[in-house]
Image 1 (cartoon, one colour):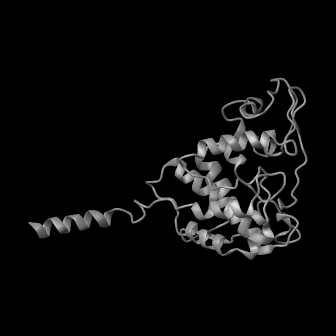
Image 2 (tube, helix red, strand yellow):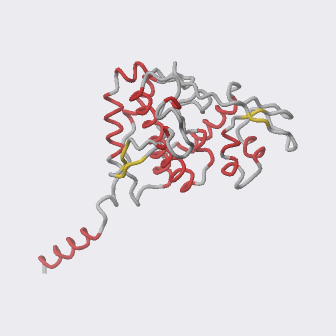
Image 3 (tube, helix red, strand yellow):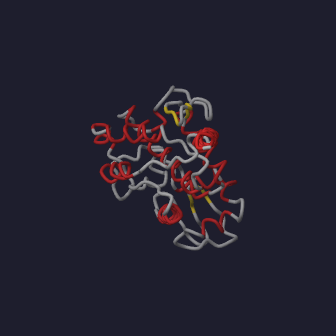
Length: 247
């Protein structure tokens, strides 16, 4: 009888996927890296980060070995993939530093969605080779239907939202994303919000479909803007600076 119970328990255990009970990685080391090398404005000291890259490399190894499992919550998965995008973007820059722009990485002639830095396969998650576009477009935008992710993803450029100097965490990601939205729309170098003549980031043009699934673009922006835009206002889009977000 005892032997039969043990055999049954073993059969059940083997039927459960090994990663079913896995936990998200601890992000404390990543927050420490960001606190050390990213200032309150979101600018990165890439020179210092490259000279002190071992902690980042170790954290990236942790991310690569910790792909999301079925038991993770939506917020755990969302925080994980945002951290993956931002942390591996840091790696992409310091691997090629010094550069003046992320767009300087790769071939001289770049075709969108073909051979830009965002299509460069340079990391693995759970054994699968990936690039930054995979994370942004095929996972975060596709699976989570949360346009606030555009306030969190930082492609190492000055017109991007600022790089938050702490990791995204599942237990506070809702507040973090809302805070990123308010910060982004209050930054006059990236969005110039007035009631009747707003000039906003091209992010709102490039991903307009994401922002307008549940409301108008004006309604969405007004959730975070320091000044409420009139519903009939004409929205204009600012030029986008791809200069490196470097201190």
